Image (cartoon, rainbow, N blue to C red; front, top):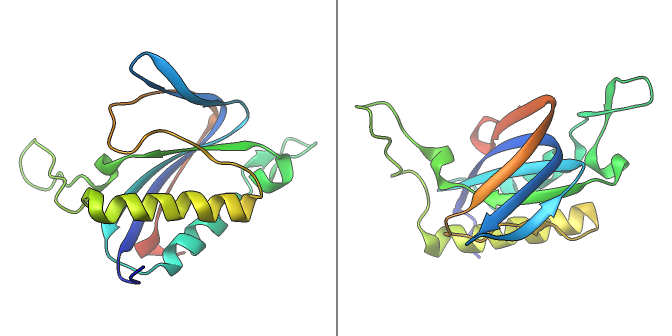
Length: 157
C-alpha cells in the first residue's frame, strides 16, 4: 500500500450507546464506548493510521472512580463503532453548498478505511464494529458528557 494516501479526520464521541442502521436493519451497535466518525483525504502517510489509532485508544476521556476523566477505552474495556464519513472533509469556504473535493474517492478511501479497522482491532485487541462504507446510514447515539473530540492527522498535537 502506498505511503502517501492518508490524511484522516475524526470526530470521536464518548457514548453510552450508539448504532448504525442500514435499510431499517441495525448493522452494528455498542453500549459504553466510542463512536468514531472517520473522513479520509488523499494526503499524509500510512503512519497516520497508526498514530490516529493509538491516539483514539489511549485518549483519557472516561471517568475513573473519582469521576475524573483519567481512563482510556483500553482501560474501560469499552467498544468502538467506526463509521466512514466523507462529509468531515467538507469545504464551506465558498457559497452555501459544501464541496467534498478533498474527500478521497472509493479507490483510496476503502483500503484506508479497512486498514484503519485492522489497526484499531490490533491496537485495542478486540473487534471493531462498523457501518458500511458508501452506504446511506442512520447513526444514532447518546453522547456521554457530552464528550466530543475532533482530530485531524495533519494537525498532530
